Length: 275
Length: 275
Image (cartoon, rainbow over all chains, first blue to last red; front, side, top):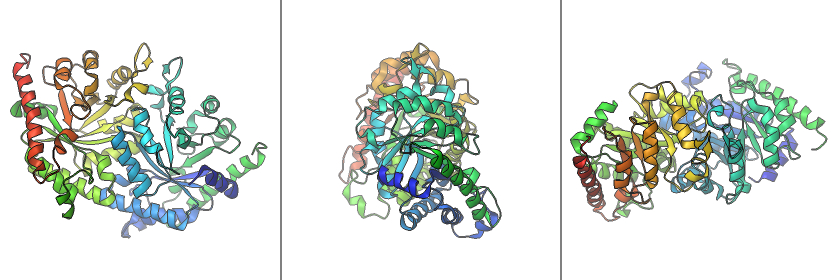
């Protein structure tokens, strides 16, 4: 999917909501556990109930791997379902991968070619040759960790290197990599005040923003500092939407929560004269 | 597996060799491709031919994921085969994972509980709460990236923070984390001169050392600067061993290459008076 197609979808749906699929069998409605593939059934219901309100789905790969082969089958069915039924939706494999070149290439192959995701999240610690194999895939997007939403973000990401915080150095260096136009960045909503500085370095790239909802980030603050004239934001909510209810009507409650966020986003988009 | 059991195995086998299983269907002997599960058949032959010469196997998870469900099935069969037939061998899931706490816990569950690996490699960028979920598993080991063997290691890992290189800061900070006694570290063989400094910070922890062989690192140099009085090293070779030949006798050629390294290691162990 091209960035232009993503932007069009945002304009049409008046939404820049990404729904995170972190499916934990201990948290999903118990009546689904009797189905042959509870993880896929859960995802399918959530997707059918929210697809017109969001522009991206983000399966969290850990939650599939934790169930072994069953989990991997559910992941394949989930991405196939989205790609066939809702091909306009942007898909993110939230995998946080990164290794030496030939290994990163195998991860890229797994998520871009075999599973046909539009994008994958990667970690920057191993540098250029660990990320460039992902960037080499045409029409695919690589979403690199910059400043994450968790407490541990302050352990290393905000340490000062060359007179600036490490996450800024990571972003600046990555701009010099081959095919860096295919980069997006993870920036946590819990650190909204940082968006202003980040936008000075990368005014145009899309940012994937976790941390709204369960982790306490403010959508208004994120948009105030992080939005650009093409919106430039994919704001994720996982637990706040998918676990809104554990009853049989869980998908309706999930829709209600997604709708609340979409309406808030629509208001922001309508009131932003620059868009 | 306890660290003590790992040390005993090193002493018995006179080896601290780890064999990396990076199975690429384009590189394995072509006659295996007619088998039902070529990846597992390849691994099984390599394992049977080298188990007395090495003390650890390190499946590279990317190379399994790249083949989807088939790959995951081969991974499960490979780890089960090692655990059942050669339970003394230390197993490493080379996965380079790391995410927010609840997600890291799911990865830890996948590799420690479901697949029954002894250890997993993790990335440090997201800090304490991204690694501690792995450290909480009793009898399991978490191998964190410190200074990697690739060119991109110099992009961020060697930048100066607080007057020292980032990788040193990462190691020092990690010592304060809960259950940090379960930590090992990845340090590339291509940077042998750095081991001296690293041993000042962590004299006792085991180091997993990639980069000997195909990547050009020297075993002698690594041992000179990195060995401690309990050996403290797991030296990995992947391509140099498993792709020594693509003929039907590939496993014999793999054994020859493993034997060369084991003999070199035995000489080093015999000549080291401190052991």
